Length: 134
Image (cartoon, rainbow, N blue to C red; front, side):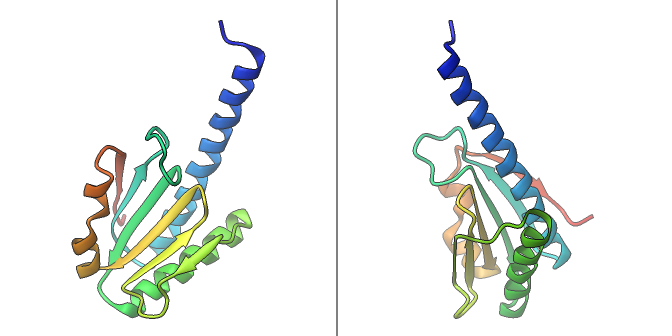
């Protein structure tokens, strides 16, 4: 039998996941606006000791496009959800920009860097969903 406290914890986790999922969707909209390529969302929520609920990963073919995608993501999340990244890095050379929204971490790579690090393989036990340009 589930206690009241266990039910509250379960419901809080469910609400948190729904908020994280919505944040990831807004992030993906920002990526799509700047034509990010091979967009994937890795659901890490069922992986013990994972660093966040979701990773969103994409790539672009130039430093300029990587920076534009990052800017678009920040604009979309601020406008739609009033959310700002807790941490951001990689803007110096823009080979790999990371935007950390705590529950969702965004990885925007240049093509060669994404191939080298291969995050999808590193987190292979995550549920992966692909998003394409429409």
